[in-house]
Image (cartoon, rainbow, N blue to C red; front, side):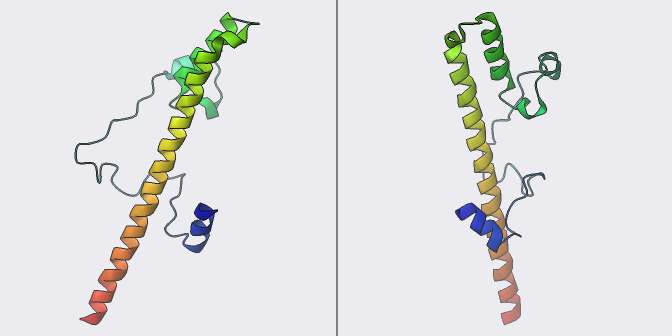
Amino acid sequence: MGTYWSSYRHPENFPDRTREPTFDPLYGFPNGRKPREMIASVEEMEAAKLDLCDRDYCAHKLLEFRKCRSDNWPWVANCKHEKHAYLTCEFDDFVLRMKEHEREKRLKDRQMRLNAKNKALELSE
């Protein structure tokens, strides 16, 4: 509810998830950040006929899970470790995306406050 309400009241500060971040991704990280890399190649994902929605940073875990299921059919319960690894990867990816969204929102709020403060200083001079 809070996220929805803030996007309703201040739409100019709410990040657009369909666009690239407006701020430097390394801003606030003096030692840099660990780059995210795709482990599964495009050819592997096409060969496995993954849907476009499944071609994310956890695709390699999904490929392992699907391979295990096909190898152990009909005893797919033997693949609980692969399933857990895939779902954990998806959750961690979701958390990381939400942290990035919140970071972008806070930086936009900060920029708006600084702009308002500078405008007030210009008017008082």
